[in-house]
Image (cartoon, rainbow, N blue to C red):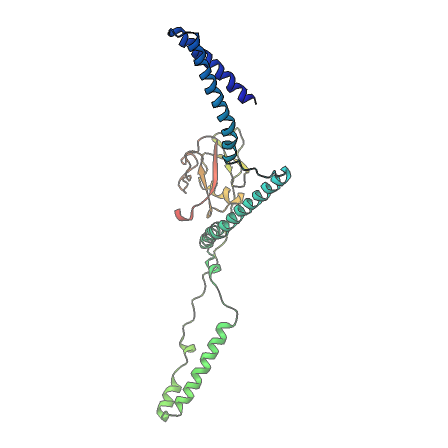
Length: 285
């Protein structure tokens, strides 16, 4: 209703302005102005009637927007929670499959390599072999000896007396087999003894600290004149075998150069220093 009223007011205002402009610009009289106003009112009424007839038809023929049923908020939250759980399960399955197929074999390979390297360095490479049950080799040897005796008996039936005598004069392999060399005597185990800590106010005293992989830091005092290998003994006493771990400088990160002919001062330890204990790279050894 308000829309039709607005159209009528707008039409009357436009018609008034049009009539006023026409009368001012031309010399038509009152009769012509009334005739023009009547025509304008007729056109305005016709256009209003057309709008009132066509507008409902156009509105009814236009597609109506879809109306979706309202879903409760609790149902929406429940569906979102289910979708979130399903997505989380998919991610968990992918992570577990990646760990089983990639990470776990890689960790087992690295652990096996380190174990092999450790056993080779400690002289216990026999632990890497498969081995065999006790008595398995003896039973196979006895079985082979029995088979050989049976074959010799079968062949002896077709031999001449001279051939039998020659075969009997042959010594068995066990008599001609050389005895294995005696095992090497076990080497005496070296006892690690660290020098006593010098007093703090002694001349040439340096303080050395080791940052261990476990997170703890151990400290000790040495003299600059001490042999540099005393750090290796200290590392072993701390609980880190030198075959697996090494002492590295903080910056630049590299292994510390140690040797029998080098003192701590020759190795570059002229003041209080902090070193890092790191695991050796098997590919670098």
